[in-house]
Image (cartoon, rainbow over all chains, first blue to last red; front, top):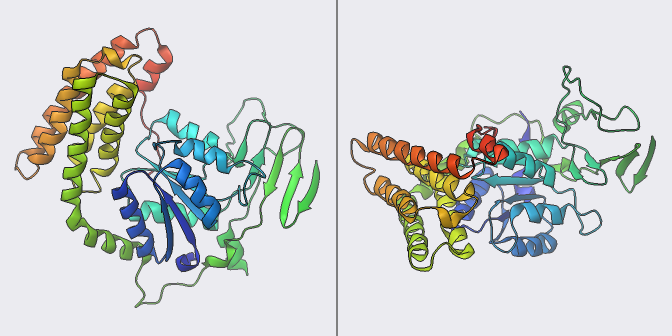
Length: 180
Length: 192
């Protein structure tokens, strides 16, 4: 079993709803986390991100000032802050296909649809910590590799040019840890 | 293809993109030690903590319903301004996301229907105020009557009717927007 030492992780929770922030804090403390910072809108979230340099960001989508999508795009600006690679988990009531694709294209690492569950949140955190994906930088995108697996039945045009880089094989950290 | 390293970040450059493997600073927190028999499972521990918090959920649900009601009253008095639209949408959207966690999953369906009505209407000022009122009243009624033995049937009847009227309105309003129609009719794909 892969284990995460939660008390060595620093979390930033950004949600305009105080009830949801309390629930997230409760779950994260339940997992064993000690350092959980909160912000109630996108602007405060960006400021808290710069100030606290969290290991993992958990953000809502719909928020005042700027939303979780815009916040993600601001964080994923190479050179604009100390950690553009930070794992971002988007927790939202939006679950339509169009929304999930928009969130992915903004550079989120994981998507978690409400209602929230302890198991769902835990799995997303384990995934971003133990199975990090490489980042892809193009003229129009900077974020985690959006290709999570190989589709042997894909017959369309290869969109990435310049070598056999269409799928980047990445050894899961959990496997690396097992191998010592 | 060219490879180089910036600090401990590996960068491979291809024709039109770079593949960047950042230094994994979180490696330090991962191990594969099995849980000791007396050691609590972290998910179970978090569920227990959430259960302890659940004594507050009914009050929280009350305040979310009041917030939605206040947003609805602002539309009735001030019309569908952008601020009023956003307020009622966010209130309904929060209920949709929280209701199941708070122990009132049946409330989420009526709130979801209200979200769809607002989100997919090309011109919200054309939404009949009565339809907004009916959604808000349904959300409040389902929550208020949750303890009734026929609450599930009541919620199903209300929600089914609201959803049918909403879909009829949205299909008419978006009749010349095939991409939106596809989106309205499409299933959700969010992973479990």
